[in-house]
Length: 191
Image (cartoon, rainbow, N blue to C red; front, side, top):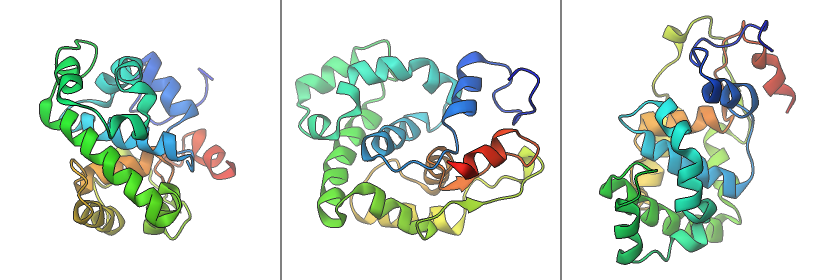
């Protein structure tokens, strides 16, 4: 795949390239994975995605495999443990938001039958196909991410601003923001 044209943002970094080539923009309908992306995108606020990818496996270990049922019951002792874990982003607000979001994630699952059914409503249950030629064209937010952010906040979720929601939409394949010249642009449409 070295000779293939891809979006420029992985910038030759191994984990970023692997993520771009296999995960980013693939339509995702698995609740556990959707929760993982929600958590990682919240932790990414103010940081680079490379930083998050480099710590992803540490997060997976520290956060019980991103299991919302377990995370929803975390105690203050667990918060202290996470705050002392050098393998993850040690931000108390983001750690507490993860617990809160797990609790609300479970409520959404109960109400809608799955988080997938709830979250994909913001794109009418289909991937929005964009036709960007350069990274400069890609927006930081859209009316859909604005609506998602507003509804998630109303439901009690934290660290779900419109920019974070748009990054989540990109990761979960709710939008195809691969550049049209990228080899993944057409591939993710067939997933």
